[in-house]
Length: 91
Image 1 (cartoon, helix red, strand yellow):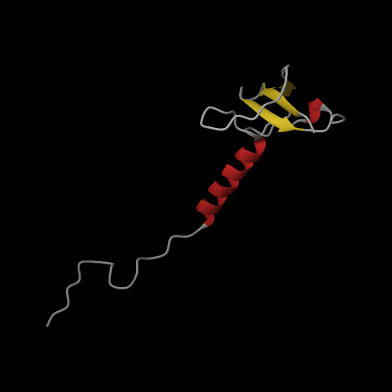
Image 2 (cartoon, rainbow, N blue to C red):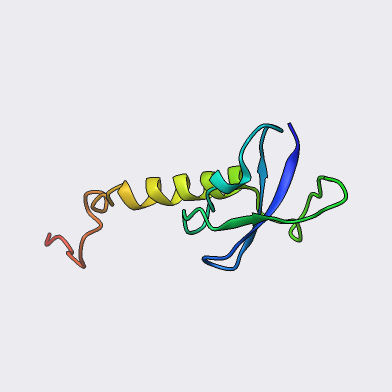
């Protein structure tokens, strides 16, 4: 499946989406703001770049959002026994 570049008119961000040739571009949802205001950008070819300067793909964004949801849903446990205060036992 080809990789397409999009620009969201709703939030102004660019993103990439892997879609079939028969997919309707008007149905593309922005992974940042979840609106269907994305327009397909013209690009010559698709290439994969590794490193900190590459564009975020929708799978990267979804994975990051899943991690954030997990981190927010986990509760913090109280400290282990004996670590709550400055209690010093008397002899």
